[in-house]
Image 1: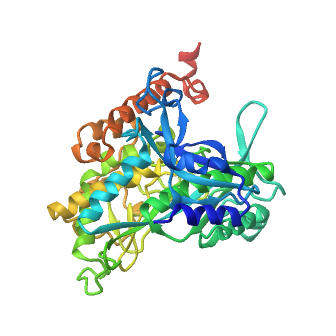
Image 2: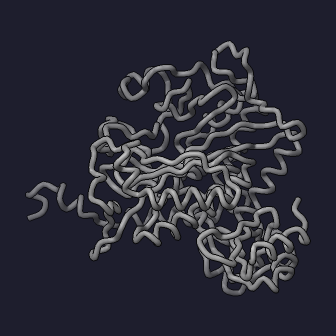
Image 3: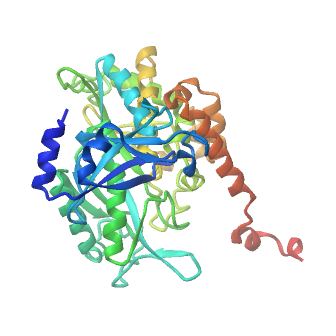
Length: 454
């Protein structure tokens, strides 16, 4: 734990004059107040005040007492795009008590429960995102400053990455400046899509960093005349953006990777605990989907069907089947290395505090119950076809937000992982689905037969 005197000295050394006390709402969107550094002790002990009714899903009405955002000293982050400013991730309190509708506060309780069992959840994330511009009619298009990002298969293309080298270099330099090990960046599978990787940490730190990463992309993209979007699928004919998680459970005392077993009979280097964890994720996967892919748009990314649909490059890169395998990107869970799992279905639009908490709870339920996921799938699931997939008994993930919410309502483990946030989450997401379902889209007008239109 970092002490207040140490942080006060670091702020003085870093020339900090203002603080951002930042938390997230139900959707994981960062919210903040700016506070002069002279009031550091106030926001540490009492917090910065917010009216919760001004935000969706915070469990407050206009009559409710203030939510007080108290800064977490361990999250101290000098803001690299502006001098004299630092950000602290904050926890919400009401009347001096932890606010149960605070996603970060609740996630900490989930992590504390796991630590009491001797477990630490270590997570890395692949933050895919697009750079776009907005047209006069409100639509968006790929930000392509040199008009060269048009390849059908643009992934890793040198010209594509050179096209936005300024943005990527500034982002990576900034990340390294604040102590993150940003170790690679690339042009992803879709035109205008990029990824910048940073080293894994404990799940709370990674959730804090992913939130700040989104804040950073918005500011550095803006400097170049672009908009950074973490929308799951902003374009019909391009691959969507994931927040693929890489993870393992470690021993809370020794740091030993409890998912690692080089003598694994299945040859994947996974321990029995790792297999039981996968079994838990599989048991709760349909309900987990609602938290990992929490928007209507997310399900445009989780498509079942021809790999050619929804991506001009020829692949979706987003498995919609509940499966695991070796180092194989057609699976929901890929064994990226011994003791190292990756879930490829997590959406870039998730709230990381809620998603990580639900995922951990599901996996540990499998550990508690000794669930086995069965034998791994070692082939290309894209080539099998739906009939063969069904014959093998491989389940599909929900194909709409409404379907995943129905699964959530039937899953007590994932419900409990959300605590009191569950009711607010379901209410807001059902309202989102109803609003979406009422819309008449241009596609419908184009697709209707002529005799219906006349």
